Image (cartoon, rainbow, N blue to C red; front, side, top):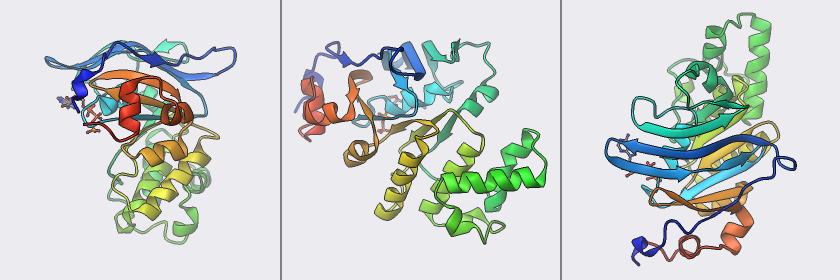
Length: 269
Ligand SMILES: Nc1ncnc2c1ncn2[C@@H]1O[C@H](COP(=O)(O)OP(=O)(O)OP(=O)(O)O)[C@@H](O)[C@H]1O
């Protein structure tokens, strides 16, 4: 199948009525360029608060590029044009303090990347940098964050042991705990389970579903079952364009665009 056969401007993008849906973050005309490579075109997407939105699409379709732009991880790597609206501010503006903004828009990466420190210090490090020094308060945040990431029961007696001694799945949940310790509003997750075995993957998925009570999650995933299991909304990316964005159920069972239909039914590429 020739994946270039589709009309990339023929799109079906859901918009939300702000009276009925609280938005966490949205983009207007977002475009990303790596030098001459126009990697992402004209993405205007709204993300509902306390929901999980999955970004799906073939390799190289621009999912990570889009996700990384949302908390300015592409600064210095790519040129990002357009606006990213968060609480009435365009966080793509050069005036924004990126360090402060990332406390609100946190990120969990594909490969678990704990610091070479104890489990406890992985969580307290950034908190201490941010001026939280009282042991009691730190202990409380460590416990809450590890509970939030469904890791507490497994590590509560070994908090001072090296994080590197944990399994890959435990390390990834520690990275989730580290991200939520900062109490972000939005969690960006770039294929958070791709390096994990099926049992750890399920734990991370269960964790996500729990987390959406308090956080808005935007996740890149190659795993279609995962997208359909955990997400409320799905955006399908193709060749740097968002072709379709709707409730996950609709994208998987009643896609409006042929490209989406071909992709979700496996007749693609
Ligand atoms: N750091 C970079 N420098 C230059 N080009 C890049 C960089 N990162 C991504 N690209 C290019 O941008 C395009 C989109 O890549 P991106 O990684 O966003 O796609 P993706 O859909 O997330 O792919 P995958 O599923 O394989 O992670 C590709 O053409 C890729 O080569």
